[in-house]
Length: 167
Image (cartoon, rainbow, N blue to C red; front, side, top):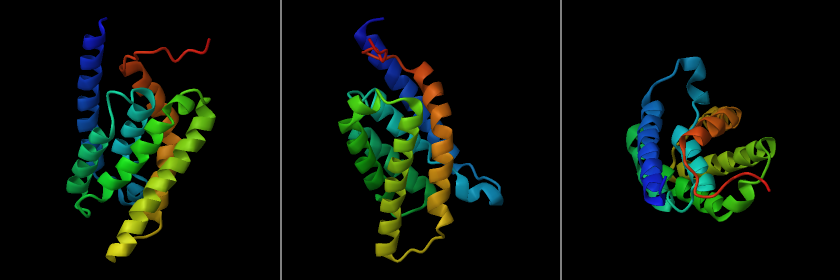
């Protein structure tokens, strides 16, 4: 497959998955699971910025972050700002992150999710919005648990320009 067709295939897959992640963000969960709803768009952005950083960058993070803000009715730019910081960090470290074993990468993803939710917590605190601690800790737990599954599933959908195999 040529490089141009490969990029177009990746962009189409990412666009469809971005829409699916926004839909999953909007879909309500039962009350006992509401605080454990994963950040689907953030997990997608982390995967894209680690594995295909040249095609999906901070512009993608900003657009998806604004869509999450609009869909959840939060402060406009809150999720966009936090997503930008996460994608900046993961795209700068993508060469190291790609080579970590899955268990170690999952632990790093947990730290990244904690950073993301700390930024949201901080923005809400500055603006005077109060939320329960479970609304910040729950998505970190569920995102960490789901990361290995999401990583394997998304790994089969995207075409990489460079091999991820160790020599």
